[in-house]
Image (cartoon, rainbow, N blue to C red):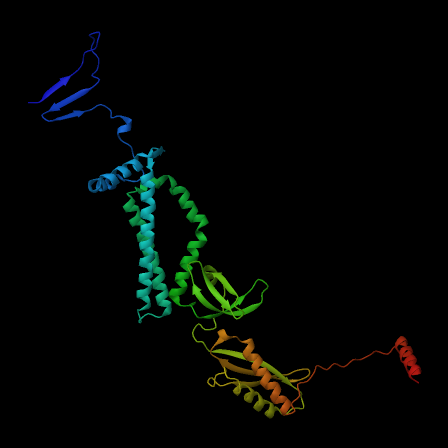
Amino acid sequence: MTAQTLSNNTPDGGDTPPAEETLTTPGQVWSVAEPAEDEERETLVASGDFVDAVSANSETAGSLLETLENAAVTFGGKTISVLDVLLVIGVIALVIGLAMFATRLCSAMLKRATRLDGTQQLLASKISTIIVWAAAFFIGVDLLGIDLTALAVFSGAFGLAIGFGLQTTFGNLIAGILLLMDKSIKPGDVISVADQAGNESFGQIRKIGIRAISVVTRDQTEYLIPNQTLMTSQVVNWSYSSREVRVKAPVGVSYGSDLDLVEKLLYQAVQETPRILKNPKPRVNIIGFGDNSVDFDLRFWIRDPEEGLANIRSEVYKNVWQLFVENDVEIPFPQRDLNLRANKQMDQLIAALAKRES
């Protein structure tokens, strides 16, 4: 039998709606009255299960955790305790540590993959890093028991931040991945770099990062070029399909020189320079007859442009100079004819100079 008791009486004997309704069953009582406000609170991070698990093993630790849980502040309908803050910090540190370990482990495994070249290893490393950190984020949210719908109030501002503030960052990230996929730019390549004054120099790509690539020139100046710049601007890659680079060295000799001898000496100057390749063979061409000289163009090939172009051209010119001096080949100076138009003032000046000398 179920006993049900309804209290409807008031002190003055009138009939009023029941203030409290109690349903009684053997061994259990339910109350439909509104619960007290301090009996239940909504926390930002669910930490009750953690406290119960620790209390079951150690009463002292459980008591300490309950004290930290009771030290809380409430705002915006959410209650945040000291324990919640410590748990959040601990979980974040744990997830970040595991993500960093997983990233290094993936990089080490990819380096051992001999079937992949350097560019493919770098691309796979970047993609694996993105996957690991994305997984770490969702695992951390799940461990903390955070309902992502609680962050809906921030979704509008966060979306604007990505759309405007982080637009360039994400653009550089995608550009770096695309550069690695089509292998147009890769670590070790030699490209032309221009400074703010417009002076062009050669640099070797040392690293391709998430935001920019690192290029080191011969004078050890390191340029950080955004990935998007390489995607949208014209870039001279000296080692894109081949590391062999052709260098030109113009030379002029006087019109009275033996051209066959000059050609022979130019070939000899190239052969005595160590960095110049034997194949493809160097080439000497007559490119024109200038105002004061017969113009030759000495062309040769090297395979190490990162070691510099100006220094190899300097070595060739030094050898050419020594061979020309030994074989009496003249490098002419510019010559100009000066014509003076006759007039009264000029005649008077010439007469005065002649009178003075006599």
